[in-house]
Amino acid sequence: MSTTLRTILAAFALAATASLPAFAADACKNRGELDTMYCDDNGDLTADPPKDPKKWKNPSTIVFTYTPVEDPAVYENIFKPFTTHLSACLNKKVVFYQVQSNAAEIEAMRSGRLHVGGFSTGPTAFAVNLAGAVPFGIKGYEKDFQGYNLIMIVRADSPYQKLSDLKGKKVAHTSPSSNSGNLAPRALFPAEGLVPEQDYKVLYSGKHDQSILGVNSGDYDAAPVASDVFIRMAHRGQVKEGDFRVIFRSQKFPTSSFAYAHDLDPKLVDRMLGCFYDYRFPPEMKKAFEGADRFFPINYKTTWEVVRRVAKGSGESFDRAAYEKESRREAEAAAKKKK
Image 1 (spheres, rainbow, N blue to C red):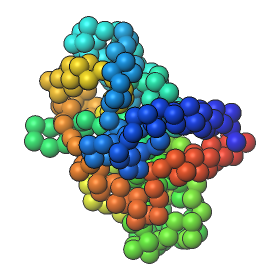
Image 2: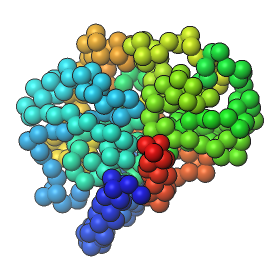
Image 3: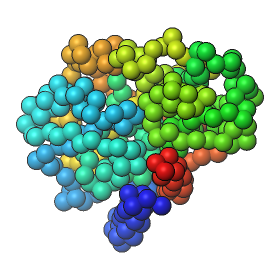
């Protein structure tokens, strides 16, 4: 097990142990799938603010990040106009915190080092249950939010035309917590004649861009990835769309959510949500996010229902045991890749 993963899992265990007495006093009426650190008395599937106002946080510096589906440095630059706006809107310093993995982003919010950020689709549910994240928006348009499809890509010059052609081949999933990169393929591919782990051994690349580049270079025969990441990479010139063939496309899923930490002062949350919802993306941000021009309000309980259903269909859950199991597999796969 890697040092990073060991640190994350140890922090999870310590936080859970330390929080038990507090919850007995708080008399939580409903927790649902949330970890023991949190309570969901209003039934919206996300963590309620602490009952004791003394536990509400109103930091002088707001830490913001965006899901590491690609190079984090790319997104720090893309979001620079927005973080500048958010700083002025809140009259607080705002810093972009680069995270290298979904696990690191989730742990940063759980430990109180991250106040608001974008979580990719699958990790959003883990962030909600394990880190007290409260999703409030998605990149979108005037009347709808932006979505994406799970696509299975192969090289255009390969012989593969349908999913069943990939039996026994090298197929790269992205990371265990990813919706399009792992959970959705496990739920949807069997009906198309391809069963992950049975018809091919799942290889984890770590990120969507690494899966795409791996197929392009011939390291992998195929990879299930998010369509929006693939399109962005093609538009930036990192790959040529014509060099690939899409042999499977799923229904629409919600793209990355934006979520705040449950223990932020509710007055700060109200101000911050206004800063997000009123903002309109400048041309460069709009171009980077395929025409999306705003943060569209969403409700986690309803908007993420399809994601939770896919996870259930793939035999996965978004609890601590599943997260620790899959994070361990992800870390071990990354260690093998470095050798």
